[in-house]
Amino acid sequence: MITIDLSPLYRSSIGFDRLASMLDSTRSTDPAPAAYPPYNIEMTEENRYSISLAVAGFSQQEIDIQIEKGVLTISGKKAATQHSDKLLHQGFALRPFERKFNLAEHIEVSGAELRNGLLTIRLQREIPPEMQPRKIEIETPDKVLEHQPETEQTA
Image (tube, rainbow, N blue to C red; front, top):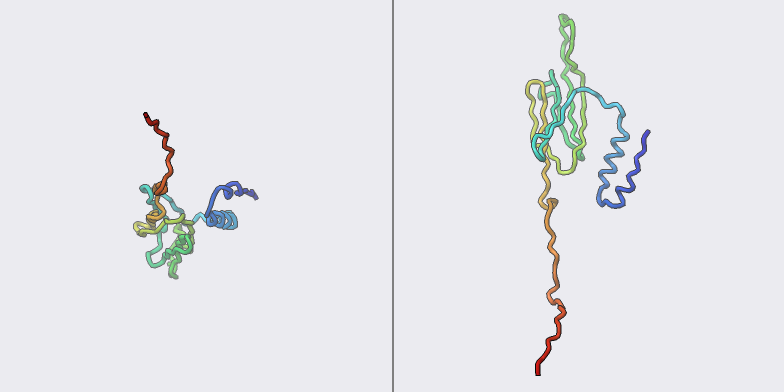
């Protein structure tokens, strides 16, 4: 197991406690994540993303999407069905699934769509106005003592 020392990062960083807990949780999860269902993550525009999952055979009612503490969880469970005696081969993987995605701060789900067996979840980074870059003006005191050179008086 590889150990990563992040102490140099913390010497010059403030408020990155969530980063440390996220790294710990990533390290403690299953080392071989499930490959089902396959998915893509795409940056569609600046501050806009989409996650697409191949969920052929699942209906909208059989898929659940939730967000809790910055973790997007997508799960699917097929309703009990009667298998036909005439089914010779079942190539569709209709087993239950669960996919989790850690979302960065200020990433919000803006919508989800199921079309042609592809579930697409739209995400958007919405930075609050108080978190956006701003210029800090340097204040000057009201009474400033300035050095004034002495003037020569002519007599």
